[in-house]
Image (cartoon, rainbow, N blue to C red; front, side):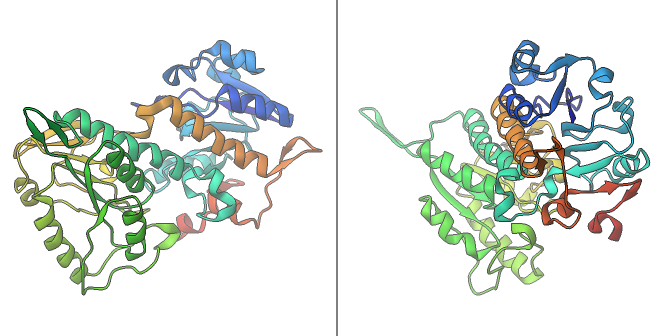
Length: 376
C-alpha cells in the first residue's frame, strides 16, 4: 500500500501529517511512504530526515501518483490532488460543514474522504482523536499568547518595593482546550476562574484549582452534549449566564473563550458592552474565531483593540506550535491506520459497519455517504 503525505498549502498552516517517527512505524507495517518535498519545513523537519526514515521524497504529482491513501492536515481541493486515482482514500481535517462543495468534489473524483475531526468520542478512538490532541495545544498556546500581550506578570510577587497582584484569568468553555488553559494559567501563578454550560464539568474545574462560575437556579446541561460537546441552551439560561458573566468579566485581566458547537457558528459569549466594562489593558483570546467567534468584534488572524482591550484572534492556534502539533496529529493518523491494518495483505481494511469508519467516512464510490451530510 502506498501512502502519500502532502505539503500543506493553506494560509498559516505549518503542520504536517507525518513525522519521521510515524514514517518508520508505517513502513514497519509494510506500507510505502512518499513525502512531498518541503512538507515538514514548517515543523522544522527536513526532507533528509524523511529520506533517512525510509520515505521517498518527491514533487506533489509524483507523491500522489498511484497513492492508495493520502494524508494531510487541512483537506486540499481536488485541483490540488493532481493525478489522484479513483478509489484512493484521503484522511485529513476536512471541515465538511464549512466547505461542503469540496466534499462533493471528492465524491465526484471517486475519492474516499475520511474526516479526522468526525472521529467518534469513544474510548477505542481516543488515541485517534485529532480534535483533542490539537485543542490541548491550542488551550496552552492561548494562555502563552495572552501572557505575551498582557505586559504584566501572572503570579503574585512580594518584593521590598511592594506587592504585584496575581493576574485574574477567566476561561469560558471547559472542553479540552479550556481545561488545558486552566492548567497552564494556574502553573503561571494566575487566579483562575472558569465557566461552562455543562454542570458536569464543575468538578473538573475545581480539581485544577480554579473557581467554578456557574448559573444557579436555572437548569443547564447536566452531562455532556452530543459527542462530548455543549449544545444550544434555552433563552432563559442564556440570559442568566449573560448577567453572571457581565458581573464577573469586569473584574478580569484576561478572558479566554473556547466554546464551539459542531456544524454551527460559534456561540456569542462576550458582547461589546461587556468588553467596555473591562479595564484598559485587559486581554481577550478568542479561540473560536475561525468558526465565527465567541467575542463581538474579534477578527480572524488579527489582534484588535476595542475599548482599550486587546482581542486576539489568531488563526490555527495549534499550528502555532507546529512541531508538537504535527507529532501528535501524525500519531493520531498512525493509530487509525494501525487499528485497521491487515497484516497479511499489508493494506487497510475498513469494516463498513465499524463505528469509527461510519463516523469519519464522508464519501465513497462517487457519493456522499455520511448521514449528517446527506441529511443536510
